[in-house]
Length: 120
Image (cartoon, rainbow, N blue to C red; front, side, top):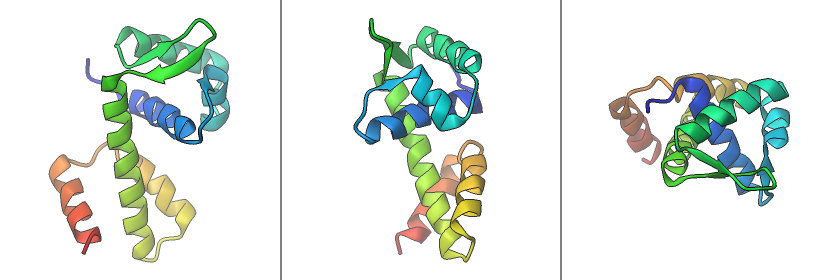
């Protein structure tokens, strides 16, 4: 199943929230992303059906291996692109917002080139 940009954003959000060391529920995703409960509920349902997310009996969300792979990829892209833009003089807020837009559309080849350049 090919994810849309919004699905990638949800997975990345769950990943970021998990990195904070707390269990994640749909309501946490709502607060983090600023989306309504019905929107997040629908998205979680689709992500569960696609095999990207699982929820336990208490409603705590976990990423499956395939969900984690996508989330890590999006997170890496976001952090590297944001850092790259900041190094060019873009303020942090704008760099983060722009990275969020770019991370979903940039080709693997272009991203790897930015990553190599940033690591110099």
